[in-house]
Length: 266
View 1 (cartoon, helix red, strand yellow):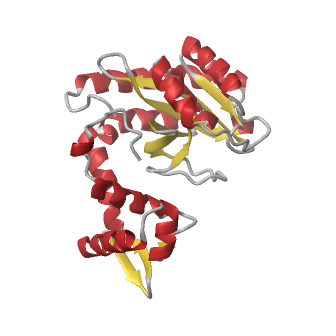
View 2: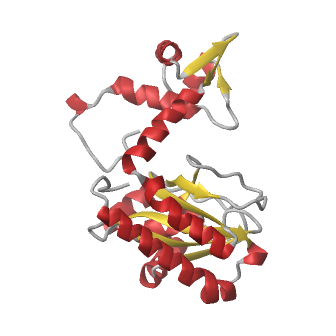
C-alpha cells in the first residue's frame, strides 16, 4: 500500500494502520458486505488479523455485522469529509463550478491523482442521466479520463515513470489509450496544450474536457473537467465555447487556492 510520495523509515511505519485501511478499501459497490474469509482473500491478510480489524472497526462505529457478514457504516464518510474540510476545496471551488455548470449546462468535477487512479473530490452534476455513476470519492483509471491525463501530463519524469511501472491498460472502448507509447504521446501534447479532450475512452457516449488547477507555487495539484454525452460535446463546441469557459474557471480556482494559506497540496 506504500504508494505515497512520502517515504518513511520502516520503524516509523505502523502496519496496523495500513491493514485497517486495506480492509476498509476491500469493500466496494460489487462487495458491499464481506465475511472475514472474503476480506482476507481480497487483502491477502490472515483471517485472525482481518477479524480483529473488523471487530475494532465495528467497536468504533465504522462497521457493522450481521450473521458473520460485515459492512461499512456512514461514519466512514467522516474520513473523507475530514479531508475535504481540511483542504477547504468545496468552499473555494463551488462558486466557480456552479457558474461553469450554469454556463454550459453540463456536469463538472474536480479530481486529484492517487496512485494509478483519479479520485473525485468535488462534483456538481446536471440532471441529465449518464450511464456511469460518479460522486465525491469515486475512483477511475487515470489513463482513460481527461482529468487523469491532465494530471499525468504534469508529473515529473520520475513520477511518470513510477506510474508506468504499475500501470495496466484495459480497453474500455475501441478509443481507449491502450499502450505506454500512445499515452506518452498524448501526455506530451496535453502538456503543450494545457488541457485534454477525451472522447469516449472510458465509456461509449461519454466525453470530457479537462484543465489543470495549480497551487501558489504553480504546481498542478488537481484537475477540473466538463463531462457530457458525446453528442453534446464535439471538438467544435470545445474550441468555441467549453474550453474558454473551463480554462477561465480553472484559473479562478487556482487563484483562490493560491490565496488560501490552508492549502499547500491536494
